[in-house]
Image 1 (cartoon, rainbow, N blue to C red):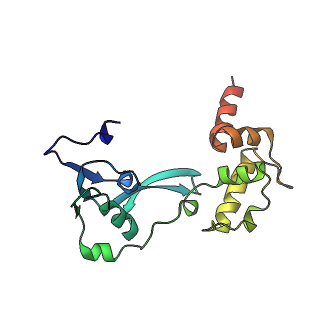
Image 2: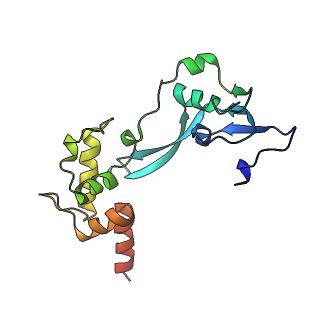
Image 3: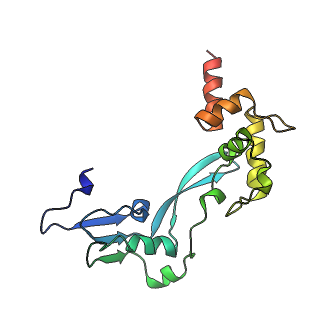
Length: 178
């Protein structure tokens, strides 16, 4: 809450750019943004079945969004800690989250809400078929859904309302082993 209080006269704030600098929140008194050109990205590894928090180069859109935080209330500057050539070599946009995340929770919600076949849903950025296949396989392994037809089991219904399927399964396994 303190960050929203305008700074005293003569005080300037500096943002060391992170993903936070890409939000639509306007913090009073920001006239300088220092952009490292890096972003922390959650990526799902199908091999390990875990999310990994990776540090990657940001996209052009991300860098431009960060620069836009400087000077929302007056003249401002963005200092990029990477060259113009490096900027020009970056992707235009970041990957949509649905393409880099574990879909087990999404699939479970789909089934729980009876929305039909996830493979036919008109996503703005459709997940890869292998992501859906891996998500369904993981849900079966966790005992959250039946094989055919894909019916949500008790654990799956619980997970769909409460927490990620993997965590629900681990919690039940831990409590059940007494």
